[in-house]
Image (cartoon, rainbow, N blue to C red; front, side, top):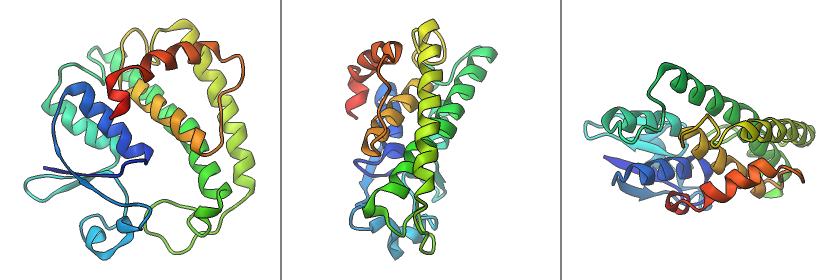
Amino acid sequence: MKLYDAAWAPSPRRVRMYLAEKAIQVERVPIDLAAGEHLGDAYRALVPRGVVPALELDDGEVIVESAAICRFFEALHPDPPLFGVRPVEIARIESWTRRIEAEGYAAAAYALRNGVPAFAGRGLPGHWPEVSQIPALVDRARVMWAGFAEALDQQLAQNEWVAGDRYSFADITALATIDFARRARLTLPEGAEHIARWYGIVAARPSAEA
């Protein structure tokens, strides 16, 4: 298997953190996003959408989307469980992961792609015709981010980890999202003490450096 990776992007980082927690070794192929390698003919012959990460299996099939790649490895290596064991735990982790993606990560992506000059004409990730920036989406991103941060802080006021009493893929997703949001100039509000407590713990895990 080969994992097509990119050093600074949040989605590949999510996979790297997951693999580090599982102590799984996979051959990695770096893709230079700054140079546009993901949009070149060679990579798009493998991944037509031009996105990272991507996992090429030994039979040639390619899996994209970071959560799907991690689910694939979870089925192969169920211990330690990062997607839950009990039905309610699995549902809780899935629910929070989706919320983080839909509210927190989406806010960061809106802010970055519509507010940073370097992304002019690249309003959507991957291979698309030119997509103009929409400045109003930066304002929407700030509203989304504030609401997401408040909800996450409330959740962590009652739970040690994002989805309950066990570190999970939801924590990986939240850490990658918060760090990504900083690049998009979205910061946590003052007084988010529960996120701060949690962040100190998860950021200190060795996997956070993956």
